[in-house]
Length: 317
Image 1 (spheres, rainbow, N blue to C red):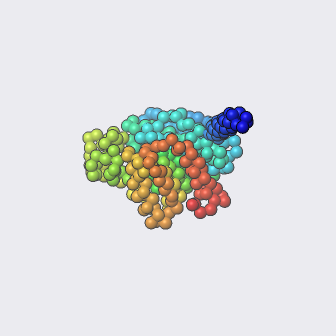
Image 2: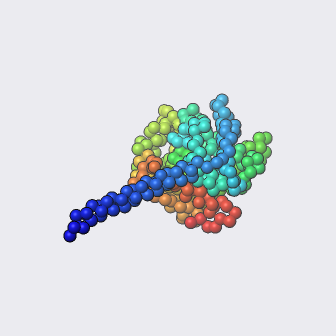
Image 3: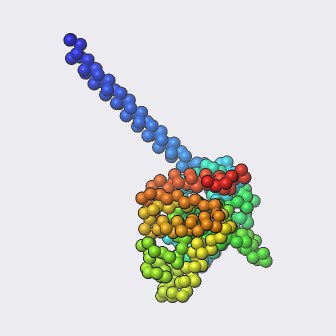
């Protein structure tokens, strides 16, 4: 009986000790996970910045070349664009860490922002950026016949424009860059605009057949010219140029996106599937126009390129 009063404190002390050990272990595990994450998203690379690939309205167009320590001989164009605005030098390498970890040489391509350049001109310039990368493929140690492309929102739209409208340049062009092709061979993007002719469900919807209300200057629609807009909307809608030759395409899109509705990607993928294209749509539940775990999604992008671009790639899943 004398042992009972002293045994209870010992049991309490034991529980507290075990609890403390678990807490410390979890804290150490969290710290280790954070450290591992930081290391993963900060790979070693060489970065050549500000390479001029063209000119628009007196402004130089530039791109960067980000080369991993162990390149796999393949390149991915990273379209730096949001709201069809782009800032030279705004690319953050950690965003492309999974691509660099998989050996891809990354080419951030910048353009003159709207409204200084129209969206039509921006597409022309991004196309030239791809042509430039291809024309200098040997210099950068990549395979010109296997280019991937990445982007989000406006960058995703421009990526799909490249996927659906990329083409060889004029064979008789004096400039070797102009002769090169703007085609891409695999696409991995976030929440792209796919159909400017039908913006229903978007906060930019101004009425049937109307241009997006916040981007009138970007599309040269001040004042609004509806016949001209119908032509422009068709010209700049990837879904209107979709064919069975679409390269493998992966889209991640939040189903709560009110700026670019999930239906934009859904309709594009559905039509591509009917044409027999290799496509995949990942619906992100509850996500809007962007979400915190997007850097982790780029890991899936890297694996997509592994399946669709590498020489040993099998059928995309």
